[in-house]
Length: 283
Image (cartoon, rainbow, N blue to C red; front, side):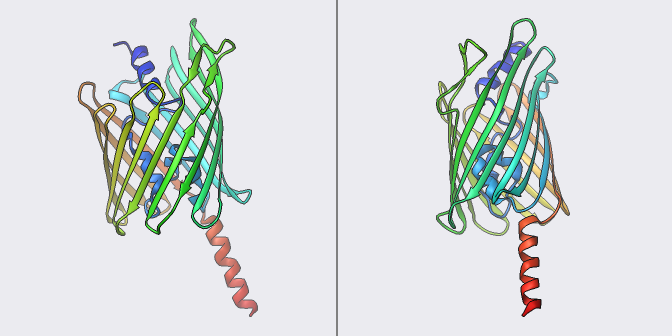
């Protein structure tokens, strides 16, 4: 299989934004209250409502140890407009075949246990001398918290499809995702993402997180669609988090990924605490 053919295959399996090959179940971390990762909100825009401080992250993924099959994703999120706003961008491929994505997302809480998220972005695909087109992609997501430790959500991407280019003969597939997560204790979390892409069988991605110490955690999971297993140690240094992802495909071998997350200040929570202090001082 050529590199271009491999990239086309990966793209068709991941809607327009590529599911990280080195950690395909990473999106389940958006459903944990204790080990919440803002980067994982790309799997559900409504989960952005949990962001209570300015945060930015960069993630790189190299599928099956091939340089042309690489993905770079970056995002920044901050409380704003009575909710949380986020900007994201991604690039995948190499000069002779690449995809890119630019998007804006917004989420806010609707009551004590429900959040709604919306995302709009532009997806582009470029193959020199053959194909150069783009499309506007959309996402609507909902997050529910029926119990203190249990979170569940629904994500719908491109519900009506999105035509690529002027002719629109190529289209972005519709993706429907359902996920849930449960924080069993202060050190253990279990979540699962179920995704159905039009034209493909549903995929089930269970994920677990174990946190033996505040500075070190471990994540692991599997993806049923491609028969992949993955593992990731997660290191925390103050306001920074570093994760190293490794996955194995039964035929194509290993993939590697590296992610860095940085939180800049304590945002809404810090402001609320300051207001409470002022009120106490006034009394």
